[in-house]
Length: 55
View (cartoon, rainbow, N blue to C red):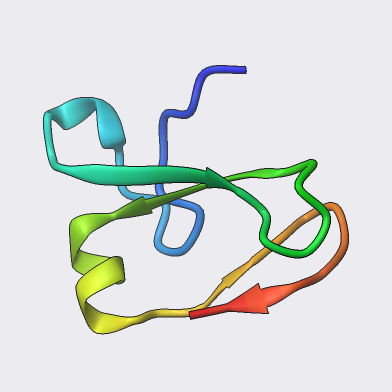
């Protein structure tokens, strides 16, 4: 699976912006992608697999 957008705000990650990707801390099955902006502001994300909400 290719990650192309921020899991929080939907920003296009292919634009060259710095981002982080990691598995869901709860289930490990969903890949979470976060743009630098959402990470800095600690915006919440939700795992579409298990519903876990993280900062």
